[in-house]
Image (cartoon, rainbow, N blue to C red; front, side, top):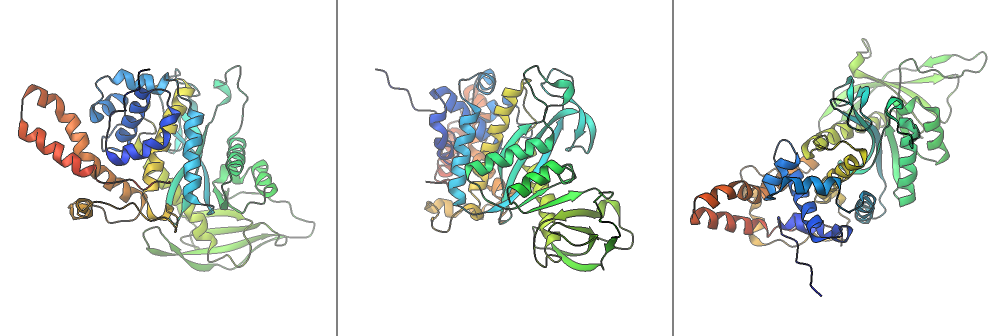
Length: 429
């Protein structure tokens, strides 16, 4: 019986991470394509289209990568299950902040499934595009992806589809995550969910704590003879992810009498209440929270910005397929690359695990003039890209080296790449 050949290598830390998923792919060629797509998504190429990824990773046939995304016999559900299993292992039972939000990107025409004229968060207005409801977590200021579901507008429903609102999709996501055994400290979401009684009831039924945005004209039932009371403004320090602070103001709004759900108005200026600097929120958090709830809700904006930055960096909207099944496969591949970066962040490591030992050459990596000394997700991605550079540049230069024999260049790139291969990924065992 003929043994399958080993998959071609990319860079050690990418290969080590992809090894966690190898048995999800039924053949060695599909596994090779998975590794190349992961390396390409992490690389510095601006647009993560499949032709660009093929050039950057040494794949001679870009169409083969398209076949991998659209038609190869691997299942998105199995890839997702493996990713969530490893993520759960890394979290080791720790609770985290869960953020629910929708994300959308502009798409032309009507050939792509579920593209319609709707609000597109990426550009902040109604346009033709595709939208998904996403869940992502935050632990010690490091974000990581969890689940997504495609939002299917009424006009684009297929005969087999059932229309579901964004809050209904969010409830399904929370149910799936709880079934997986993930634990949440608090759920954050914007007013699309804060104004949904079904979504709030679902959180209450599951005994989940939440901080949700609401509209400025949010209504509430008042008992006969009661009134709305606006308490005094109180200053608090809004602490940002980079450690900087800014004074903001918060006041509680009491509808009749204070119940288990409380309402707050947060602003940067209590005199003018600027539209872009004022937020209405509701929460079932308990205790004296006026100094903390503003920062808790502020995490939502920071996580959303972090996710927007991450999805743009990794090519979330760069798919060139039109059917929703292939688009979901692409998005799951992006989530896999996102998770690789998150795994390298110290915050996601358990206290019991020691980082993998690195070679002496690796200890010199921080001497690189562009090495990023920050501890955030983007800082980590910047450094992983530096480690990927020799491999990517070698792939881009290879066609020239086939044309002109330059032994010194060939040998030098090979040596530099071999040093990069001494760097090992931090992964769950």
